[in-house]
Length: 440
Ligand SMILES: NC(=O)c1ccc[n+]([C@@H]2O[C@H](COP(=O)([O-])OP(=O)(O)OC[C@H]3O[C@@H](n4cnc5c(N)ncnc54)[C@H](O)[C@@H]3O)[C@@H](O)[C@H]2O)c1
Image 1 (cartoon, protein in one colour):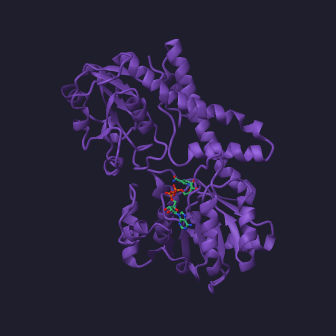
Image 2 (tube, helix red, strand yellow; image 1 turned 120 degrees about the vertical axis):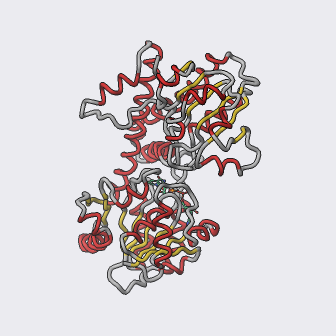
Image 3 (cartoon, helix red, strand yellow; image 1 turned 30 degrees about the vertical axis):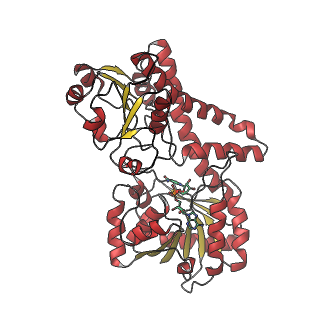
């Protein structure tokens, strides 16, 4: 099938390359000329395992191309919307980019001669957006579906090609719904044939599936981080606690690792946008707990700074702190709302001399001007002369780093494991004072 993808960021570029990988002919459109240029050369504009490989393969085969010109979408049968929906000043989702994408598409819709043409929304949007956009594109005769995306950065390719489930939010009109569903089924045939569930529902439920999934995940993380605070106060161990409660199938083990909390371009803004939308709908109180989820997430970042002061003394001036990690999670270079960088900034604000290192985000960070901290190009360089080591992002390079080697490089052997991901006994054996999150 011929398809187009509007917005070629972490979601859109991976989706475009993955759809080409399934055998479709894909054009990606983005307003960022630099990104389009890189993608057109088969170069990934961001770090995502396995992405550059499928990008190159499909660009070379001619099945995948990129453009800044919306005219390139004319004649395609499915048009995906994958532009950003960042947080606005009020906390609500900023839909400017989604509306601009629709503006750009409108003159080129209704030109497909291969069968029924659809627009498929992938961006995470407030409930009610799809119905509004469907009205906007109705005059072109093209139907809208909402097909939210659940990919995880770091696993984006695998999650796109083999998702846990696919959700189709379909139009209320039965005929239009059946036609749109048939188009999506044809598009995703290899995924459906592999047995992945495909769930069909209305627009508003599909929109809510996505945002409530993220609200649940954020809640789970803040839950275990709240337990970590209790464990700290009660001299208990949150990793033992998580292991024990996680064996209850109703709770489950995943996402129960206490640490410096969630960040990135999705969870923080999504839980705020969800609350803002609930208020608009007159049911703000139902999501009051999400404000607490946000608060716990902030508090856990701050608790690491308190631990640093307990271990190094109140006055951090002149103390050298190595922060291992800048991306909000490992296997990504995404630094949006990064807990590790937030922490680095807080330590700088307390006059510490901070050096940050990150295998993928580090080089991007180093190119920025007026940084308040140093950026090291190797773990060794970051550790050299450090009074304190803080793990901010659980990259494998950090969690497998030899603590005996670290001990040779640092000025003082003190480590705060902000992700409870370091082998504690090994670091202690190397002479380090070890502090985790919620671990005595
Ligand atoms: N990143 C994820 O892991 C993920 C997962 C699921 C859902 N989402 C959702 O997907 C959406 C996109 O997220 P992202 O992380 O890819 O953001 P991103 O910022 O990486 O990408 C957005 C892209 O859209 C482009 N863009 C903006 N306005 C445009 C326009 N008018 N026309 C064409 N292109 C335009 C930008 O230049 C950018 O390249 C968001 O709604 C997000 O919540 C993201």
